[in-house]
Image 1 (cartoon, rainbow, N blue to C red):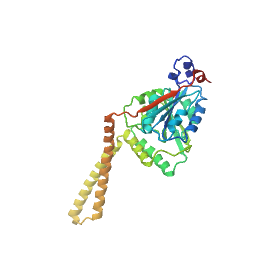
Image 2: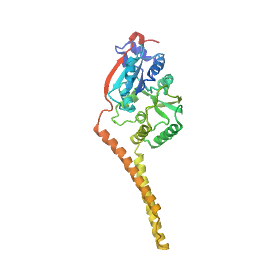
Image 3: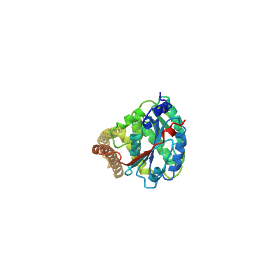
Image 4: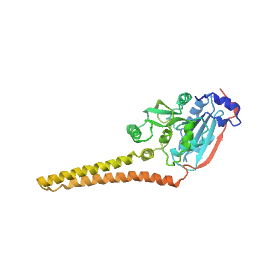
Length: 337
């Protein structure tokens, strides 16, 4: 069982107390200048009340507004603040990977900067971790402030992903979750560069618990995800953790071929018995368009997998860090509580 209080005793006997950080909170940031100050104050109030050593890791993912300038001004007397500035926008999956690579905590929580992931739930997540769970999934029961279309599409996507995936992926669980140190170490050993973090964080397995919550509206600003980016992320999730789409394409082709064979026998029998009627042009075109569409979908699906092989073969880094520094609180102030 994990013991949060043990961090205090470790802290007193260590030359570098941040080797004994209990909790790391990773926050990917992309153009979030409207909400950063409010987010930082909210999270600090919660972390400073915990009886353990904590750090916040802000990963600036190539923001084009003043987010990085604001991040440099954030401070705390009791929580270590780490700021990582990526050289450009690599995407949220890469930003989360950078955070995981730099986290020192025995437990790690991923948190969005828009306050749609309630920081107030952090103590409950830590309590589950103390009970021995390595992964604490945060399941959304309501998604306030989102359109009906987005809610329905997200609902059915998670169920489709769960059905197709070769790895058990909890439905309606986003990136907001807690991971233990041994889960983090397994994730860091994964070599893939085209990353779908929801699947990657589910892949190691280990003991898991789930906490349900209602997701509030954004505190400020607008979502940075466009419709087509969400579609791309969805395809990435399906093709990264399952080959079932390829198998479905194979079975679909086999089914159409078998149906065509049966239909051919039927036409032969009909011609021999009743004679040969002139086939209608519209029906022929519909069949050709249908088969052509199936073929293009199968080729496109195959292209998705081949494209992933191509990207992986180049072995480029997932992200590039331009600046990385932290402001550590003093030992006397860190031993509060």
